[in-house]
Figure 1 (tube, one colour):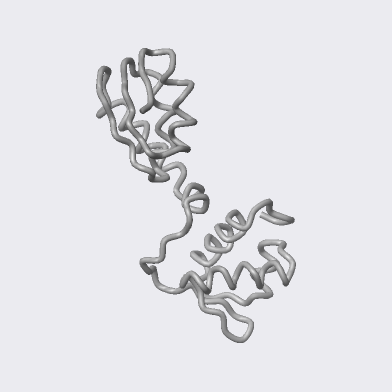
Figure 2 (tube, rainbow, N blue to C red; figure 1 turned 60 degrees about the vertical axis):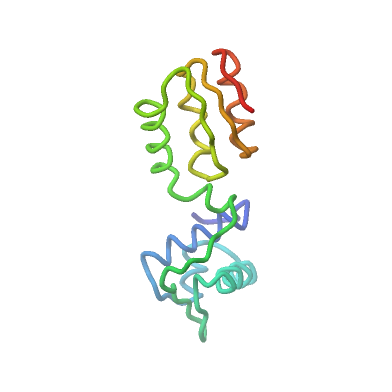
Length: 148
């Protein structure tokens, strides 16, 4: 993934993927692999270090053991996307039935569920997940379903 990436979340996610393959790597090599400028890489590594994900020492970066650090939703939304889609597809096909009321929490996994609810009828969704509500608005509107 070379060149300028659009958002910091995308860049940081790419750095973490590289670090998962190479838990200890030089900053110079990381810059080569990502195509980032040195100053952008420094800023992204500071973010990762402050969040407890990496340790920077003398031109090297080391991935730290998993911690209980939780990243912001936009970052988490972009991780494990295929797995989240599988979970939502299975929920919609095997667990959620017509004529049900659902409470959807603000998790990033449930953000993918609206795409799979179009087969259901008369489903009422109660949620405080604005992203879910916006995405589900159109697919639930036509099937005597709704969002509260």
